[in-house]
Length: 228
Image (cartoon, rainbow, N blue to C red; front, side):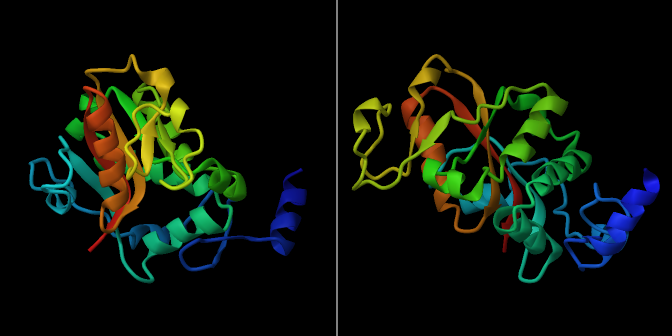
């Protein structure tokens, strides 16, 4: 049936997310040239990472790393845009593959006991159809043999509309997140908090402080990208 697949690609080609040129293999995300032009962030093994500097005095983290540099019209921006807004869910796992290739020996993965994503509000996830971090987190989980706790954090709609606050574990009225009550036994563990891109850091700050205030766990941060 190879011929049928070739005919299908002739009329419905699969395009590179970076340059929109046709790709030969529908499992590919980027062409070779765009892959070579991705802006990987140099691996930093000391305590002076950009994420740690950005969150200094706001959130205590053990490690903070990112894979790509996110800038206007960059390939990383195009990848994340297609992932979040064009139903290209497979990009999430693709970014995890690149992350492990780039950072496979980083101490953060030996440090981690659980991987936790920044959650979407249920209505937002239903609208989008998926959390853009799940493919990323699940791939890391499988390859590193580290549990992925998709629902460890709960995204609150807003402080004014928390109609079910009694079932949320110790959510402060100004917090964007709360801890899921079913994970109260997860204590004294190392949590790797993952997100797609860090700009101001306010979302990660809120989620991270929710974990620190409501548990005895420590946290580190891994993002797909960060902006300068």
